[in-house]
Amino acid sequence: KAYPNTITPTLAAPALAQTPASSRIVGPLTQKSAFEQFAEDATGRRLPVYGRQLFDEAPTTFAPVENVPVPADYVLGPGDELLIRAWGKIDLDSRVTVDRNGQISLPKVGALTVAGLHSDQVEGYLHSAISALYKDFELNVALGQLRSIQIFVLGSARQPGEYTVSSLSTLVDALFASGGPSATGTMRHIQLRRGGQTLTEFDIYDLIQKGDKSHDVRLLPGDVIYFPSIGAQVAISGDINEPGIYELKGETTVGAALENAGGMTSLADAERVVLERIESHTSREVEEFALDASGQARLLKDGDLLRIFPLSPKFANAVTLRGNVAQPGLYPWK
Image (spheres, rainbow, N blue to C red):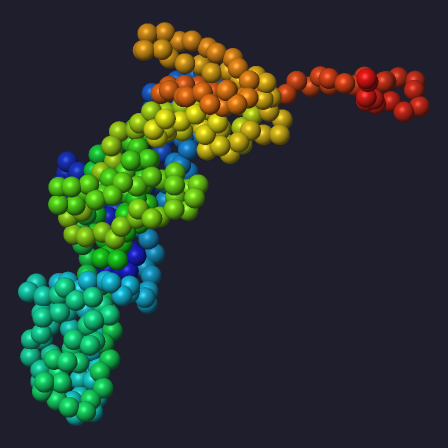
């Protein structure tokens, strides 16, 4: 049985999906990319991949949600169920399903084509059609069980394959059901392809940082959600609120990257930042600079490792009194 906003993965051809639905997406992704391993070796600790926490505890199935309001622009199609009740000069109480020809069959009325109508148009259309045969009646039409559709999740996805989803499901619903990208898949350029063309491109960072779902799209039968390979990445470690590995999108400055990482902690030293860089796949270099205007305007490159150091415990304008004094402690010194 299909429910609105419910996604149930199904098996496709063996080349696409071999994992039973009950065992999909169990726990965090443990596989590491080459850059994750590089950053861990360089810093001595494993840096989390930003955004992956969304999918670490993704459920194997979504709990059925009943009685969800259907959007007014929902388009009826084969497999949708209609609950039709009429009273007055005609008495109807029918539960009908749209057939593959897009029609429903009503007792005392006959076959009517409803496929392609929006959900808010169905009642008016049926009332007009029945009015040609009967007068003085009241009509109520509601949507029952909604049809299921098949979509494909391909590319560098954690669980590629064919999925059976509710016709109300969106791109974001499918991202969670499939477990998101693999260790080498992008989070910033996820494509929804329809009819051989890319309909929209979704950025998980926009969803996390801004709550922006403006590029979310309702799915249609045969849609392909494609995860390209991950783009340029940088690692940020040290006294930062959210140390981790971040995927770049276009030209990104040091200041913008630090903002994505939640900014520096209150104990960070803005006078000393170290940038480790891989130059032209031939050598590694290191730079040290302050986070002033010019430092924050520096552009980052793929493979950069940015280290934020803590402030020195030394006080610049104080002396410490200890021992046999009435009030030991720190005192300002001019």
